[in-house]
Amino acid sequence: MAPSRYVGYLAFFAASLLPSGILALWPVPTTLETGMSALKVSPSFYFDVQVEGAPADLYEAVGQAQCYLETDKLGRLVVGRGATDTTALASAKTLSCLKLSLTSGATAEPIASEAVKPLGTRSEEYALTIPADGSTATLTANSTLGLYRGLTTFNQFFYYYGGVTYTLLAPIAITDTPAYPYRGLGLDTSRNYYPVTDILRTLDAMSWVKINTFHWHITDSQSFPLEVARYPDLAMNGAYSSQEIYTESDIQYIVQYAGSRGIDVLLEIDTPGHTAIIGTSYPDYVACFDATPTPYEPPAGQLRFALPEVMDFTASLLVDVAKTLPSYYFSTGGDELHTDCYADDYPTQQQLNSTGTTLNDALNTFTQTTHGALISAGKTPVVWEEMVLDWNVTLSNETIVMVWISSEDALAVAERGFRIVQAPSNYFYLDCGAGEWLGADPTGNSWCDPFKTWSKAYTFDPLANLTEAQYKLVLGGEQILWSEQSGPQNLDPIVWPRAASSAEIFWSAKQPSGAALNVTEALPRLHDVRYRMVQRGLNPIPLQPHWCALRPHACDLYA
Image (cartoon, rainbow, N blue to C red; front, side, top):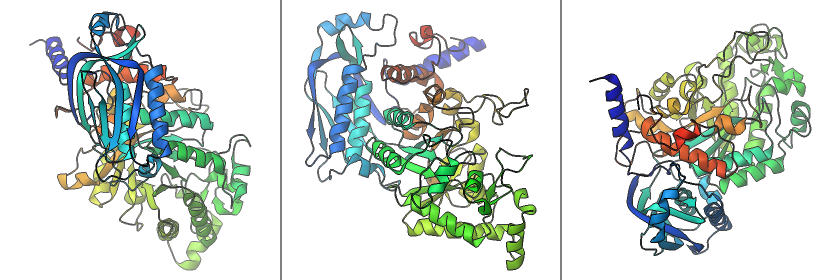
């Protein structure tokens, strides 16, 4: 058989795994039944909230859903953008209402409260039915968070043409639940600052594809834009300007905004590396501060973590921030700690020699001090993989480990029994492939070349190389944008729609038929996600020429 025919046959088979015309849903639900009937949305359509004691943020969510239903006005991604649907619509029934309710015995808590419960205890499942005869559609869940997830699915079904909002797939029946409890997006706001409005817009987009964790890498060596009441000098001296600071009220507003969209905020203050900027306020606490030349990312400088006063300062700083946040989780980082920084650092060597301890011993004490303080404050520490794989430090069994250097490292972390968030740079780093950002290096490339396409990310297997007994350790995963070459000007196109890839991996894990996820089937649906994002005011990058988007699979290799 000729290779082109063989690949073409596979493409056709893959495209057939979901019901014909299901090009809108992302992430795909656990179970899905659809029909072939047109169904119009009534101009007087309304959401009927049959939830006793419904919280304010549920009504806000319904208001969002109503707005999207009225204003998305997305034409179907076919030639003519829906012009051929008018015949079916002429005799279509009209949908007037979606009724929302909780299952018997369920308590109506705010979505924001449900969103920050411990991983594994959040109830995000829902059931959605849309009859073909125009009778009331129903959305039921065990929590308001589940209702919110169902509303995002409901909105994805509808297109617009000639003044009519409609679907061609009635009747519809869905039951849906996430495969993994952690589905994140990481954003670095230290190397370049992002205004609050950009973060809020990103949270909106995350909610549309059921991402439930905003991993906020808020500080680094370049800037400290976080206002901390006990340590005001950190932001005063460490932010790029007084206008580029996240105030305490900014943080609280962002956290509440995220929570009402079903998103937990995991804040990270990376320590003891990536902390040079602290030296602008506390020069005695930072080793090799602003040293040149530096063999690693400038500016140079790391906390003198062996010093008792630095341990106490760091523990106090972390707890002061963490206690203002509702999340059960707080990241202390722990990556890329350069030991050569301490080899000739007099205060560090004096402390080690006077106590007869090694650098590793000191790091262990530092970790015990900072993590112990967080745990006492009710927080679960999150760390980067080096804290497990490169250092001999004692971590709580509850510690969550982010795997980033390579997808191959997950096994080594799992063998030590720690829970894992998959964030491998070889699949999930959104900044890769932009070339070298350091000056005076015209032939340099980014360290994690090449560019990680959505389809590359989509092929990631969260359970690869793990034993079945270790599967339960994988909490989920996230894509991350490090901001050496990104800012508010390119935030949307560099993140979206690529970040939707991991959203589906960790919500769906497989297609409703049980078949594996595959890029051929997924591409038309991701086009749909991208075009709907545009309708909602986002600026996501095109995946292909518009011609291809209107002709599913016509631009597949060997099509």
